[in-house]
Length: 210
Image (cartoon, rainbow, N blue to C red; front, side):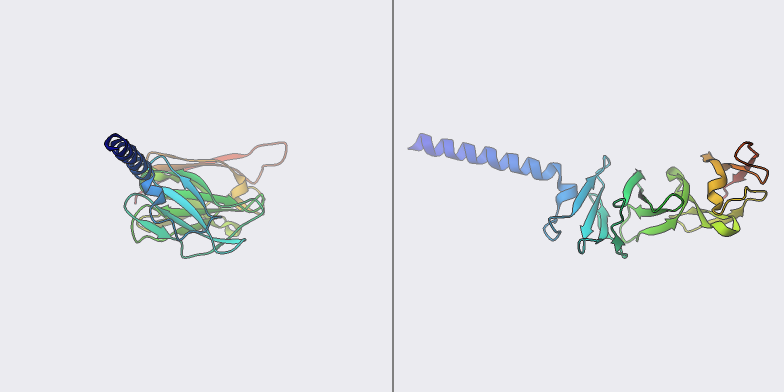
């Protein structure tokens, strides 16, 4: 009888250790998830951050994100589109970026800061990012060819416009290349003489002095 009891205790100890290991290995994601519904989905990232799609009903959801140290919930409710949900586009230790398209010429971006107390930020028609410097470039007034470069952590923002731009209803469709090079933003776009047979490439470099 003593041998059987000893074996039972050994087996119980092993089970407890295995359970503790399993909980600790995913604790950054599954802590206090009991209040989420069964249809919620979770995306775990390699830096131990996560994104949870928390459904309010079949078509509407909020976004929950966090890491080992905090958890935040979006102040906005999002609608499930025909092409699905916001998807993780990029991330680092400071921020998660989600994107979703709505038709061929419209795209939305959600910036999720990995900092307690910060709210989500939404942008229309993001063009490029520099996450190491907390920068986003987006088309805030495409009909007037206005674009913005914004530091989404500090709120500092500058606007610029492109002259001699191709005759497109949506100005961002004229941009052929846009990227960061250190502290500069480089833009290449089609000018007014562009047509289906001929390019009319223009180039501009903007120094970022935030």
